[in-house]
Image (cartoon, rainbow, N blue to C red; front, side, top):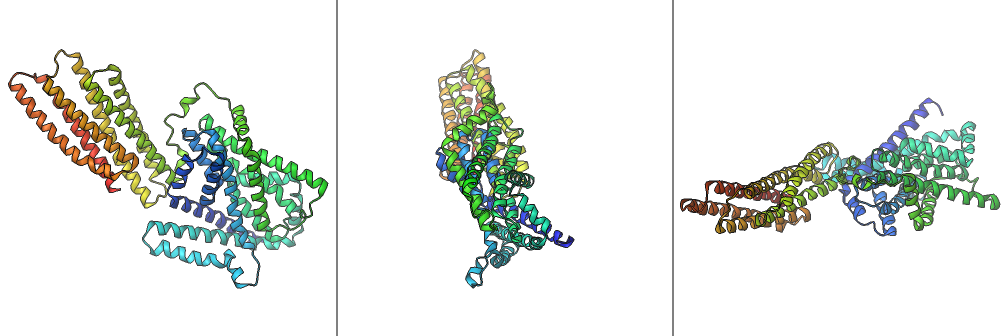
Length: 549
C-alpha cells in the first residue's frame, strides 16, 4: 500500500465512523424518546429486559449509547441495578445487528437480484432519496428519514472504500504475518480491546475488522480473539460515563465490564480447551464479513444465556467492588436531570417531563396543605408549604438551566416545541408555589392575632379555597397524563374564581359597613382571595399550553 492508498483507507474509515454516528443519532432522534421510555418502565422481568436491550440497541445502532443511558437511569434512581443487568446483556446482543448489515457488502454473485442485496448496489439510491428528503421536503420527520438514509449510504461507502484500500495489503508479507500473530489469543484480545476503547464503538471496530477481511489475510483463528477483545473494549464508554456518578451508577458500569470479562474468559477457556483436543478445522480458514458477524453474535448470545441465570452474582460482585455506604440513599435524590441524557436529546426531553411532573405534584401537595390550614391551622403544615416553595424554586433553576443546554442539541420539531412549553409552564408552577407560600404565611399571621373571621367569611373562604384546589387538581392531572379534556375544564373554572372573588369583596364591604368585620381581617381575606385567583390564572396558562400541544 502506497501513501495515497493509506489516505484512501483513512478517508474510508472517517466516512464509515461518521456515517455510523449520523445514522445512529438520526434513528435516536426519530424515536423521540419512546424507546427509552419503554426501556425505563419495562425491566422487571430479566428476559424482557434482555429483549428490550436488544431492541433499543438494534434501533439506535449503539450498545455504548444504550449502556450509557442505563448508567444514567441508575444514577437517577429510575432503574434498579438488578433491572439494569438484563438491559446491558441485551445491548451486547443488539449491537451484533450492525455487523450482519455490514456483512452484506461481501456478497459476490453474478445474479442480478442477488447483486441488488449488496449495499454498494442499493446505497447510492438510498443516498439520492435521502438527499431529496433533506433538501427539498419541508417536513421534520421526512428530513430525519433522509438523514438516516444518507448516514447509511455514507457508512456503506466508507466500508467499501476501506475494503478496496486494504486489498493490496494481501500481497504484503509483513501484513499477513501481522494477522498471523493475532492468532495468539492474548495478543488478539489486547488489540481488539485497545482498538474498541480508542474509537468507543464495538460496532465500528467489528466493521473495521470486516473490512480487513477483504485482504484475505484474516483467518477465523485470528479474528476470534480480536472480537473477544472488542467486547471488553466497548466497556470503556460506560466506565467513563460512571465517572462522577453515584455509587450505584458506577456499579452499573462495572456490571457491564464484569459481564464482558467473565463471558470472554469463560468462552475462550472452553473454546481453546476443546480446540486443543479436537482441533477445529475451520480455524485456519479465511474469515469474511458473515463469519465475523456470526462469531460476534454467537459469543454475545452464549454469554447472555450462561450469565443471565446468575445475574445476581454480577450485582454482588459490583457491590463487593464498590461497598454500600450509609448515606447512599441520599445520592439518588434530585438527580433525574443527568448530564449524560443530553447526548440522547429525545430521551432528555422525556426526563425533563418527569422532572416538571414532579414539580406539578409538589404544587398540588402545597395547595392541599393550604386548604387544610384554612380549615384547621397547623404549624407543621405551614412549614411544609414553605419548604415546598424552596424546593420548587430550586427545581425551576435546575430545569431552566438544563433546558437551555438541551435547546442547543439536535431536536425534532416536536421535542423543540415541548421544551419551549416546559419553559413557560415551569415559570407558572414557580409563581403558584410563591402564592401558596404567601397564603400559608397569611394564615400563620392570622393565627397569632386575636381576631377571627365571621362564620360567613369563613364559609366564603372555604368555598374559594376548595374551588381553587379543584382547578389545581385538573391542571396537574391534564399536565401529567396529557388529558386535553381535563385541560378544557380549567379556564371556565378560573373565570368562576374571578366571579367568586368579586362576590366575596362585596360581601366583605357590607360586613365592614355593619361593623361585623375589621379592616385588618378584610385586608387579609382580600390578599388570600387575590392569591387564589392568581393561582387559578396560572393554572389556566398551563392548561392552555396543554391544549395547544
